[in-house]
Amino acid sequence: MRSWCIVAMGVIVMALTACGHAPASRQSPLTNAGPIGSRVDVLESEIDLGTFDEFASPVAVIVFRNTGDETLELSGPRFPGVSTAASEPLRIEPMGSLPVEIPLDFVDLGPGVHERRAFWSTNDARQTTVVVTLEVEVGPSGGGVARVP
Image (cartoon, rainbow, N blue to C red; front, side):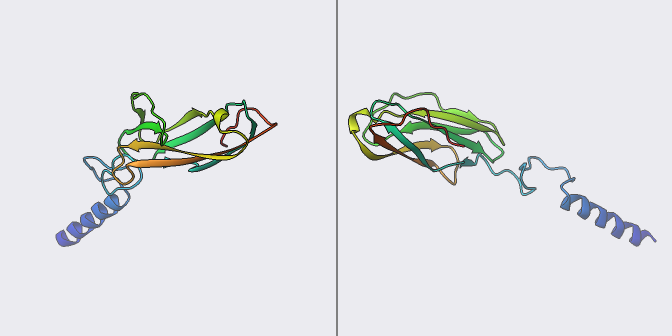
């Protein structure tokens, strides 16, 4: 009888552990495998802003998510060939999201289809750099502020 009770208690402990009810020092909100750190996810990595007249300033809205269990830090955006002032990193709490507005100036480029890549540095050990491609067509008519769904 005593050995049966020990076996039964072992089965109960294994079942509770499998269901995530066993005590843990720090478990990920996504799994019971332990901490995973910050994890960056961007909803759209290629954004077509549409057509604008040559004097418009379209705005891209890029939504970043942190699917990890530690605070995500983003530094940027940086654009190749364009110097920008350093700013404080953006912080996104675990399982949170943050929309970031990026105003674009294509006035000096003239009519045609133009593409810019924006780069962010992150503290995600798996993805230390995030690249988002922004495309706009500059034409004689159009206009308005473009938003990413």
